[in-house]
Image 1 (cartoon, helix red, strand yellow):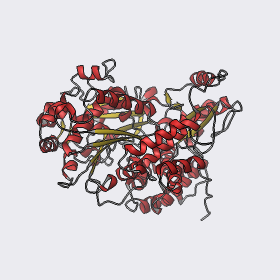
Image 2: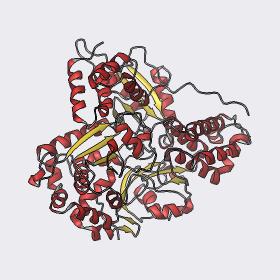
Image 3: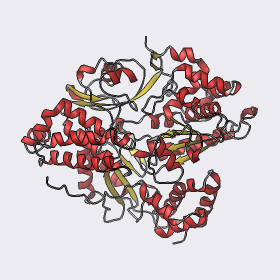
Length: 187
Length: 428
């Protein structure tokens, strides 16, 4: 799917804005993800064309940063933090509740396509309101089971016909699933 | 004598994020005053004030500025808003509440070092904060604080807001610069330091959000005024991010030198659920654990270092008596493993093996020799990694082994986590 005209314009503007056009790579990837929801190899090649850089460079950068998605996900994005400060205040219990409530495992998307959720070990910067989760880039702090229920109910609302989703799926932050676990060798 | 907050003094003012309101509280008068001064005077002023960087290392800000080689242009200022140290959420608070204070600090720093293009590198997850800064930049541009010939003083300055995309390593200044140049966020070898060869190979200063927020106040009130606040080697205040097992978690701006006890017991309302304090961590995920006996240590770079930890990025994670220290360490180790950029072997492989052993501890599959193995791996990473991420990944777990080795033994002999078991028993 070729990039929309406003995205192409944005990429060209970005290339002019920075002292080096290479600095426009990350903002260009954001622009593409904002438009299409995720960033395909074809889109990366197109970014490369517009910036006059090899596409291998765009791919190298895109693959380093965990928030760039390479495949489509649910309409809404829910990330729950399980790092130590959140764990101290019950994040594990909240993550377990979320999993039960959504009926899909960590990293999965609900069958209605509404929600993709996963837990993260990367601190999201809301330890003062732990346990917390990030819903389409907004922090939901001091979670309880009741609050999780209310949030899920809101997110499951179907998109009215003829309306674009309130939040483009690709706008939401996402980490790629962790690399396959290496097995600990016996010593 | 208690000192009033500096950076957060007006944070109760409604709509402070708006330029007009910020100006009513005295906003941008610091920048106007700075423009009346010579850049060198400003560098001297900040040197004399004793301001130290708030990002973690505590390096004197004025000295950092003065390392820029004379006559080499362009030069860049980069404000590090890639806050991602677990336990830390102060930059987010400072940006949300008063984005113009951040901009004013950046403008002062830029003018002082002779930079005409400044950058703010904000972490990708902070989208609302990114938008707040974007709005503030547009307002400041409209009002003539940013642009060509600002306030008719013949100084040109532009600010580019750059959004990261999820990588803790980019908080490390050389990795941040690499990322800003569009590459994978891997750290660079120092020297050359960024002051000599930074962004695009040009002289560059990287300053933390909280650091630059101090600048308008120092310019307005003077170095002596600032120097009278805090401790001899830790001037001013710090915004402490308190989390974990306290009654009132949140951000608290306190004068340097305030006892840790006051932060936890008075401001934080003490340990929650009437439980006893077991341990706390004064600098975020990277820093060594301290014990109740350290409660009277002062909130100060040097005092905390003397007590065996580091003030780091100003996070205070409090742990009560029910905390499994092995699990706490496991979370941090897994975090560092996840965030290791993979450039150097000690960090990439070391954090992987540490994470594996910690998982085995919690799962009840650890062997008696694993505690010493953890120490051995830690020793092989610390000081042998390319950047501080690797080093810091070992500090908390090693300090936990030092003070709570018996908990590791329990995990091994009882084949699992003794704390989880007691919770389950209590529920049954």
